[in-house]
Image (cartoon, rainbow, N blue to C red):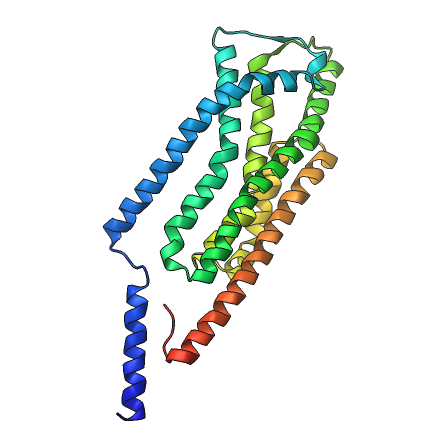
Length: 271
C-alpha cells in the first residue's frame, strides 16, 4: 500500500470516527433533551416541597434582620401569607435546581465531549451553587439595603406614612435578589456554550458594548436612582461579563490546540 493510499485510508477512518462520536439522530436528541427538562422539573417540584418545609424558619430568620425587624408588616389580602410561603419555597428550591440543571446540561452534551472535556465540565457543576450563593449574598447584603434605604428616605421626605404589606416588602426583596443571583451564573453558562462551540471569545468581544449596556440597564433598574448605587451594582455585573470572556477564551484556546493536534495526526479537520 502506497503512502498516499495509507493516508487516505487513515483519513477515511478518522471521518468515520467523527461520525460515530456520539452523534445521534435529531429525534433522539430531542427525546434526550425532553428527559433532561422533565428531570429538572421534577427536582424543582421536590425543591418546592422542601422549600415549603424550610420556608417558615427562613422567614422567621429574615424577619429578625434589619431593616424589617423594626417594621410592622401587614397583610392586605387573604392570599398574602400563602403567596409569601410560595415565593420563599421557590427561592429555596433554586439552590438545588441550579446545579442540577447544569448537571443535566452537562449530561446532554457529554457525548459530544472528549473524556478530558467531560471531566473538566463536570468540575464546574458545584461552582453553580457557589456562584448562586455569592450572588444571593451580594444582592441581599449590599443591593437590598441600599435600595430600601433610598426608597424609605424618599417616602419620609415626602411626609408619607410608611405602611408596608408583607407581600410588597418581600416582592421588592425577591425582585432584587433573584435576578442578581441568576446573573452570577453567567460565567458558567458562557463556559458551557463555549465548550459546545456555540459562542466564541471573538463573538463575546464584539457584543461587549451591547452586553455593557444591558448590564448597566439591569443595574440601574434594580437599584435606587442615584449614581453611587448604580455604580456599585453595575460594576460587578460588568466584571462578571469580563470574567466570562476570559474563561471563554481559555476554553477556546484549548479547543484550538486540540483541533490542531487532531488535524496534524489525521490530516483532516475536526468538525
